Figure 1 (tube, rainbow, N blue to C red):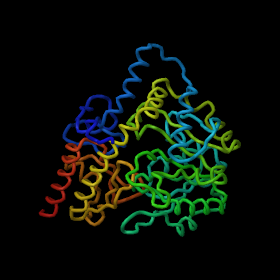
Figure 2 (cartoon, rainbow, N blue to C red):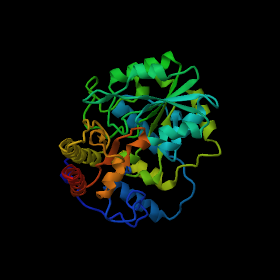
Figure 3 (spheres, rainbow, N blue to C red):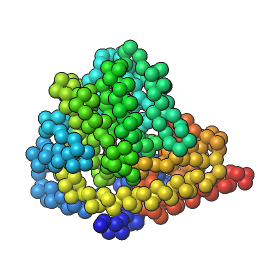
Figure 4 (cartoon, helix red, strand yellow):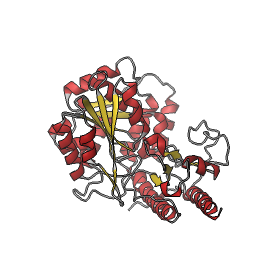
Length: 391
């Protein structure tokens, strides 16, 4: 049995001065960065060993995915999700955000609508306009204990020119893992309105509990049946799971040949190939990283529980239980902080501003870090809230 103690996730690695987008943002060590969604853990040792071996080879020419890597991905999809995918259905990408933007370009025409739910990961909000499409949104419903898709709002938001629905599952930033029942209802909605689905499933390996309907840790919406797979672009990557986002490797799964042709046409001349080191890290992570992953999820689960207890004990702050990801979506509206991200930044904690997710009054906290780092950040937040109350 793998335990988090088999790997030292408590090790604090100094990332300042390493051109880290996360750690060098503020230009001062006085602000603890807990915003950008990469983790402060070393990647699996097998990944680092494979990268060292590839670097020692000394030649870094143009690369392609090896047959072994393709087989590894297809075997993983079959083992994890009982999803049988043919190798021709894979389209390799240098990043998942690229896949979101390509999907917007590939589906529909200039001026058509793209629909998504909010709050949501910011590229969902920017990709449609960058692609000459119009964004339409439907707000998730806050059911007091969790966030849910509000299908009445979806029906009110869809138009005659809506062609694409972008799904985030597991959901960033709320941490929801949508159940089979919810996904089937969403499929029915998209079929009724003849919508293509682009499903961002980048956090699919970072699940804390299984889906109660199936016992599976994650359900790719396209795996629900051939009809839905025929209308779906699924985006996955090892980047969040194994902390290799900076290397740039992801893939789309598109089983409909015509849709896949449209997607590749939208990529042509714009999207670069995946690099050699990214392919190397992906292969090593998927082949050998699961023992590390199980231990890391155990560690993250304890971090999640710590965050939940601490935040809900701070007057004026609240959050729901996180089912997946290493991201906490914190409601500050009762505290009337004005600009909550700025408030906590002054307290020495750098968080995402919820406005960027179309979630005014919220902040997003990344708890993918050593426990001592997390304790420091939560302590600073608690002190700031207590000082405000006293003042």
